Image (cartoon, rainbow, N blue to C red; front, side):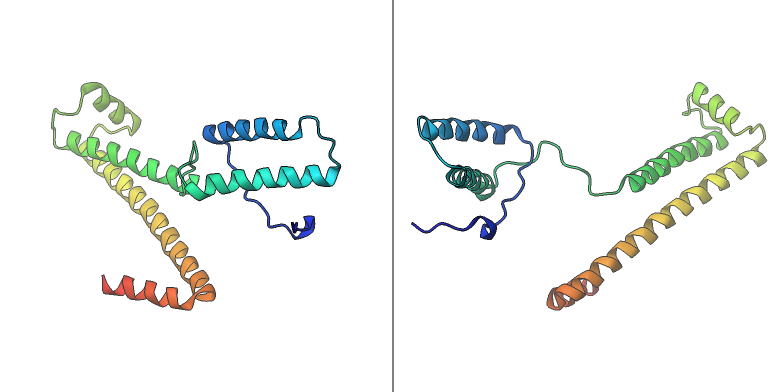
Length: 178
């Protein structure tokens, strides 16, 4: 039986902390206890046995692809989510102020008074200025996000061009054909 030297073994993928992995690990640990029961192994043999068990567990989990992470992080950066949230908040306030300007009574009195107090607006002229300022804020934040997305797309295309030109050209064809 040929065995791979320790320094030439393929690296195993780090396993994420999932509930089902814990169950498989417990099963593997019980099997290891049964195998090692009463045997006196040197450190090299023990290392090979542990590596074999880890390789089997990794293959079991990655081979089936049934297991997913318990928590998946969002792919958008936190500052982008923050800007999107502030844009939504500003749009909500903007729509409420536009309704107040129209003298529409759909806006609740409490919300109406809070918004008017917050922006110190008693006259419709002041209300127009506040509405215009909020529109400009939304526009500026939206432009920031679009610049980020363009920059991100350009970075992706540059990386793709340097690694796989054929895939890059296919990507360009898809964007121009649509």
